[in-house]
Image 1 (cartoon, one colour):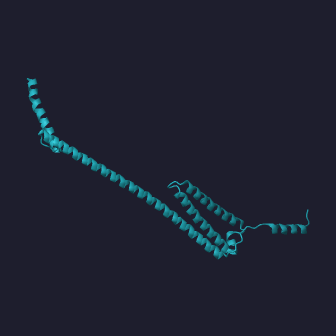
Image 2: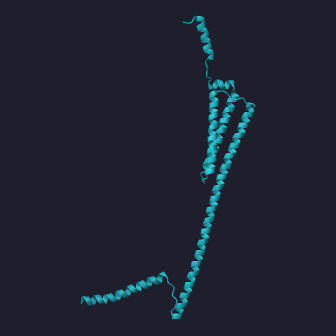
Image 3: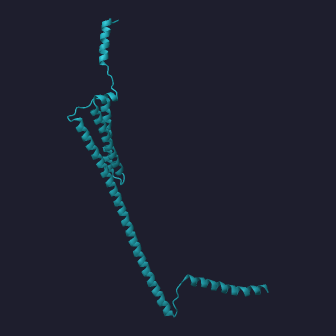
Length: 209
């Protein structure tokens, strides 16, 4: 059993070696600029991650394996940066920097704006690609319309030539040209029906007698 004096000395040494975690409020009170810089870096990394993810999506339409691989590496890199910031905050052991917190915040804002600009550039390229695809579709439709017009003109020409040859043949045989119309067809059917009726009626009367 240790003496009272030795026991008190051991307790003081033990208390001096304990690590007391600091809450978020206390850390901000002690170094608010560092915490603000850290938060700014987090938002900047999130913006960069968003830009990288948009690039990854754009690489799938149209499908480009090289762009997909590059964008995938960029996404992984941004995720690693966020992980490093997380460990940096947990360890509460900021790396020494040679710039002031104000300069760090300014640099973070510049990087965030660059990430947003890169995002807009990716979106513009995507829209340009869609416009090119639409232009290509319009060109194909115009080509199909032109081909259809040429086919129609050729068919009309063949029909006219065939009509002229038929007319010449009829004129040579002494027949008058007759235009085939729905009214002519209707009158022909009515005349045929009347002829059949006139023929079958007396025949039925003879069979009854």
